[in-house]
Each structure stands twice: as structure tokens, then as C-alpha cells.
Image (cartoon, rainbow, N blue to C red; front, top):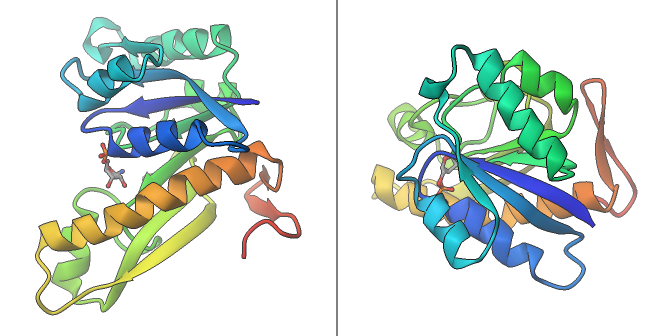
Length: 205
Ligand code: GRF
């Protein structure tokens, strides 16, 4: 059983979707730890309600990103974590984290990357005028939403859309895509070799 850690800064709806999926038969993973860098993150309340081990670590209490991530890595190692899922985590992964978990950190982003990386992806998509958007699950590298893509799900962008209506439509797909990606990795059907995503037969459709 793959032990997953989730890093979240806010609301935590993707964390909740992962937690619900992990409890289904044959998911292949369990959430062993939720860490938030914000004490008031909704994700911490969800973890409490679901009795999932959770922790608030305040980066301000550390002298550097290296020290903060060294502490994170020590919690992950202690909990036997095999994969880390960033879910609305508002920080870039630094060298310490990336080196400790090479090819074992993933992220979800609310656009079809490489279009619209960074903040307010849904607003960027609306402003640009694209007719299709969606979400992307990808392996994390040192860039902003630049790592190798695992899977994507698309949604239409309607003429009547606001940032909020488009975000809601994308979020429905996020909640399907993220657990699917974690299960694919847990079963060994998807993995990373250098910057190439390896997909085994019967992995992605
Ligand atoms: C999601 O849209 C995710 O794609 C992005 O941040 C948002 C987090 O939402 N990275 P939640 O905290 O999971 O509800």
C-alpha cells in the first residue's frame, strides 16, 4: 500500500477527494500525513474530521527554505511516505525536498499545461479567450508548473463563464483526475524515468 503525504495551503477539496478515494477498495494508497503551511487551512480541519494524521509547519519559524524542507523531509521519512501530492500548496518545491523524493512529488494545476501556469490559471484562460480548459496532474520539478505531465482532463469554456463557474467545472475534473493519477502511480503503471513519464499497457486510456 503506497503511503501518500499531502501538502496543502488552503481549502483542501483535492485533499478530501484523495482521502475519499483512498478509502475505496483497490485504490492502492492511503494518506499517512497531511501537512499545511497555514494554520487556518481548511485542509487541517478536514484531516481532523477524517482522523488523518496532520501537522501545521510554519515556514516563518525556520531560518531558510532548506531548514523548513529538512523538517518536512524528516516527517515524511518517519511516516514512511512513498509519494507526495501537492494540493493547492502555494510554494515551490526546493532542492531539499526534490532531492529527497526524486520523481515522487506530484501536483495538480487548474489549466491544460503548458498553457496558463502560475496563479489564477482559470482567470488567465478566460482572459485569453480559450474555448477549452481543464486540469493537469504532473510530476514536480524546480519550475512553476513545468514538470512532466501524467494526465489531463478537459472541460469546455462557455461564453457565459465567470472565473467562479469555470473554476467549479474544472474542480469537478480535478477531483477525478488526482486520485486516478495517484492510483496509477501506486500500482506501478505510471512512473518517471528522467523527464519521461513511463506508461505501461492498460495505464492511461
Ligand atoms: C486547485 O484548483 C488546484 O488545482 C490548485 O489550487 C486549488 C486548490 O484547491 N493548485 P483545494 O484547496 O484543493 O480545494
